Image (cartoon, rainbow, N blue to C red):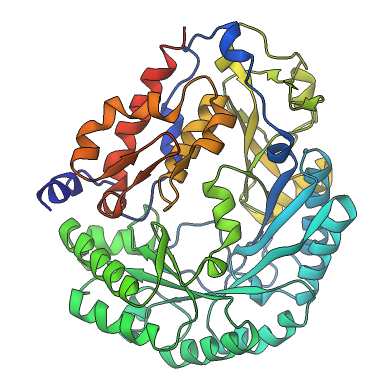
Length: 495
């Protein structure tokens, strides 16, 4: 336990968040390569053809005090407020455009989230699912999730959404079962409303209803948190997501903490709260299959989230949505033996409202050569315009609302996979690793340099996988930078 307490002091982002934004600090331009290492640098069809879709609904009834996500409060006559039918049609247009210009031919999951999508019309879901079917294949047992808040209004609409063919899972943002916490967080529901919503959701989606909870709230104790969890366990379904309350710049909570009006728990208290939750959920039959996600049985796990952690492609639709995708212009010949990859500037590409369609004319479809392995793009990280008005303008003019594109090399992709894969109970698997980095094994990359982590029972390393232990997951953000540094060092020694 001493090593845990020591590492926790350097746990800057909180136990729940291994934020991938910081991976941009790892430059790949300086890394050399050789013909031998390029001979297996391909992405198989199973990776190129499979993906998921995230639909970001931008509106909420009110903004929570801790929220810094892309959300807007709809007001009549506001230029940010777009009529539902116009917004829906634009989302469909963007989705079809992005699918047509990607290699994705099979969609395994769709997630309607972001703002409060259950305040939208059920017809939106029908439009999106139909659009996917028109362009590619929506898998027969695809997971279709609807996210919502437990207000009386949204509870009434759940039945309408359940009637839509395809939706088979809901995620309810309960966040707290304490009235003072709900007021502090500026939630728009009461405990009574939350209980009623959960009751209805369980009836409509048996075995496929998830609850979100926030811990690390001001004045929260391990005793009060345990009592709250026990109450949740008495009526919840088979999936719970726990998120540590973080103070984000620009939020109301940030101002309250800065002024001294609100006092947050200490780092050690946060760690204790998380440990209480893990122990209690474990004793109740829940498996921590990811740092912040707990499921009672494999079938209850969230397929959509697992696709992120496994490094698969996903297309984000709507204002502020993010994507990770292999565009067709990057690889025209996607055979297993020969993935052609575009040579592309390592600099991020930003667009303004007058953006033209010349991006891909900058790309030359040249296959991987023995030079510049880390200067070639294998995937793109995309971010859509944030506000609905500018996003709509981009979609209308160009078919897609993308505002920024960051080319990703194979090293960028493997770094993201390490950061996300370690969050799961399966860890970094050799199966996925060998697709992305076949010229060095997991054992060669991590065993010798992580002996001290293994001896302190924080990390397990084998030829099949690298994974954090139960204790290691608790301090993952302290371990992760060290492992990424190891990976960077290995990249410099490929020759």
